Image (tube, rainbow over all chains, first blue to last red; front, top):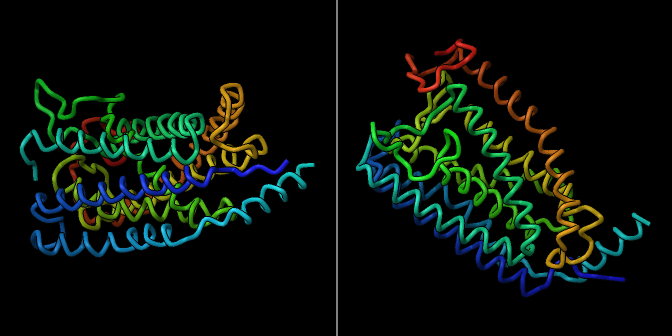
Length: 88
Length: 239
């Protein structure tokens, strides 16, 4: 019997909530950066905010890439079939 | 720099909110049972490792402690609860993104990406925490932005090995070839034991590896002591 490992809708909703949580985290971190008064080794809040902005870019790229990636159920089916064949 | 005593409480509440979002996202994607497996494993994993390092004088969370109040509302041993739940949040969110981007790929590769995403978040979280006194590093090491390099290595290893255990023992086990959202209680119990066993096997590797890096970096420390550990290091070599 071929079964999908995840329901498509659950997969999409899960990703949306993942993104909401990550964006909330980024927002909290940026606010924390602005009230920190500057990191050790960096002069002032402005440099710290610039550092924060640069560091968060890869994370945002990953989130965008995750959204752009289509849900390919045929691959999942193949993977599950292959898995069952191997285990048999 | 220490801010108002309200600041750590606001941070604590914010992280509880982020935890709620991360748990909900995990439940939507993998179902309640698998999410509880992840939460149980992550809680045991981070609680034991964090408490171990704090009790060994690596760092502490008492920057805002007063005679009457320890600085945060809820604790698990000598570690604030929001740290434990925050660790779960970052690991779970990183894992979901990895699962979307690298479906069906090798667990080594998936663990690598998840650990890199978590490390990316920590590259900002740790300098903030140090500069605002949410936690204090108290061991000799090479410090960058107030954070020891030991932390970056340890953080990466802790997430990498945890995700590896979760990916190999829960997500890609034959039992879960049925839809993850339909895992029943009896299957949950069957999955929990091997998952926890693998974590128990991997924990010493993480701790010994991090300790080795700590010892390698200690002679090159750019932060002179005394380190004023709340819990003096039992081995006494840096206290």
